[in-house]
Image 1 (tube, rainbow, N blue to C red):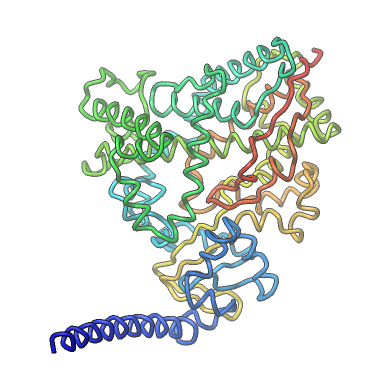
Image 2: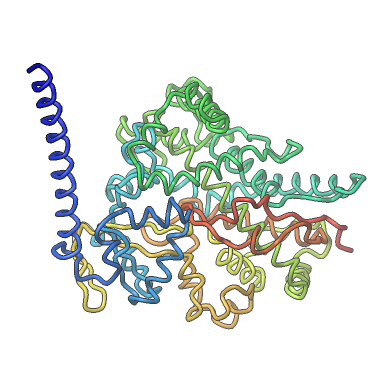
Amino acid sequence: MDHLSELSRQIGLKTVVASLFCIWLLYWLAIGIYRVYFHPLSKIPGPKLAAFSFWYEFYYEIYPHRFQYLWKIKQLHEEYGPIIRINPLQVHIHDADYFDTIYASGVNHKRDRCSWSHHTGSKVWAGAILETMDHDKHRMRRNAVSPFFSKRSVQALEGLVVNNIKKLLRRFEGEMEKQGPHAGIVNLNDAYAAFAMDVISEYCFGESMKTLDNDDYGKDWLTIFHDGMQLVPFARQFPTIFNFLLDLPPHVAAKLDAGAGKLNGYLYQILGRIERIMNREDGVNETKDLRRTIFHDIRDDVGCKLPEKEKHPVRLMADASVILGAGTETTSRTMAVTTYYLIKNPEIGEKLRRELETVMPTVNHEVLLRQLEALPYLAAVINEGLRCAHGVSSRQPRVATGEDLTYAQYTIPRGTPVTQSPYLLHMDPTIYPDPFAFRPERWIENPKLTRYLFAFGRGSRNCLGMNLATSELYLGLAMIWRKFQFEIYDTVESRDVLTTYDCFLGMTDLKSEGVKVKVVSEVEA
């Protein structure tokens, strides 16, 4: 009898579990059917599986096709047309003339960021400007720091940029003087990242990280940034897990990953500095004090008056991390890719050097940024480098909160995340014929092409550090290319130059060590 009672209880438990599983399965099946046939986006073209479930995106983003959804989206556009549904919530449009509609600015065209695509649940990182979803709050936070990155402010720090370039030039000279098989060999990604990192850290935080002083150019930092970028697609799919990892205490993060521990350690050093600044304990108060940092401006309401809770040191630390990463990786990659193509195409490199000689008659001639900005071929080379380097390759969804959007015969309801991919536009042969070719001349032949250059984004959320990055590109590439002759060394274009992975930033093959060159000699003055 007892045996029969136990058997009855077991059967009952199994029945309950099976019933719950069936209910769960039917629930998600019902949601999937609703998404495909009854959702407000059901009329938008695209594969039914993408509309049915986020697992379609997972298949191309995470496993088994790692970081490849961008190229699958390209195929889908070729099959379905310029507007497609890429997951249950998002619409992707491929039309350069519609870019400014999606990434609009102004009080009449408010654009929120898509919360699903970003780790907004993190207690630390949700406060960063980059991760701010609401349009008005983003504008408030951005206005507080934008004067620090204005054209006028960047011009004032020209000497800081030039001094770091000169330091890099001395490193290149030192590489040439070495003996042995590796004499003159430089990893440009590492070297340019060290240059950009030292500039942004000294300018924004008041103290250089001095990575240019390291024998390996502080390569660990670039590795940390790359590893972090590879987590972005994972964060999209599993935001709760990712937010938990982001909020781990530094000592715990260090045990899980040495790179994360190093980054957290540096950020908490910045946190301590921010706290001293906010408490006026650092001895810097005058507005003309050269030791002032971006945090002094926030404290003193130089840009705009922020509520006191917005000046919390932890929130500002999140901004510091974003500024450091964004101010390093995209600039260094653009410089490395551009240098590679100048070496690969000697006729382009020689044409640029002849133009540089008009304002730099000797290799060590002091030149001003405004002089370089007036050189048409240098501007064309930099535009082409920005196009080919693909800084932010990933889609950046925007949400129109106060209006429906219309594309062709389709109405996109307000509240819908809509996006485009800069990479696909920059590699569109209808805009840029022979898109894989490095051709600066295209920008001179058709000046209107600048309308279709999206390297720094558009609208109210465009790149905050655009002016600083541009000054680094002009001054850095000009001074380096005017002074040195290079040869390509152990670099394969398909592996080390071309964008083959989409991890928010465009990345090369994960086995790539970067663009390597040999510094052969100084250019004859």
